[in-house]
Length: 214
Image (tube, rainbow, N blue to C red; front, top):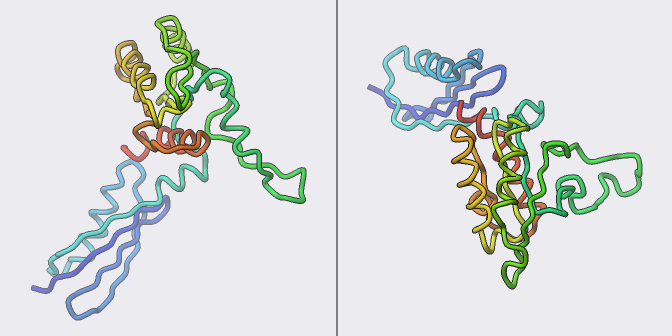
């Protein structure tokens, strides 16, 4: 029985398969994707590729589902929680122009609008905690999140890459108040210096996670 290495890429419209057997022969086939359950298209492509009895010795899987969600803006409803005074972080970015000589051109809109951004009273500096995260601030965040009814909360506090204590406390409070809510922390997703990069990465993780999980 011959053996093949198989690679499958799941796209929004088609699921593509490429198989390479022991002799180096390459075969490719395409089947319609099944958005309701992507495994159906994967199983169908595998069945077609092995119909004559080949054995799959290696299987590699990829997907453009996350890329499609970003391009089509079909991700989850995210609330962004950041340090008070920095709620425009996603919109200001690094203040660079989308086009150096075109003042009318703009960057794409952030994945989270301003009305789903929450500023929390706390402040961590490189030298330590400047404004402690107290019970009142935590309760305000929980109340605001409940009112906004998100799918996911993305938390990215100032300098959380150096001290994640405040982020973890907010997650614990949100988990206790809304157990079904997924909370993404920047200190876990991308614990690196630079607030804009860390925040956008955390928001993208929250935006894509439910769809990729499905």
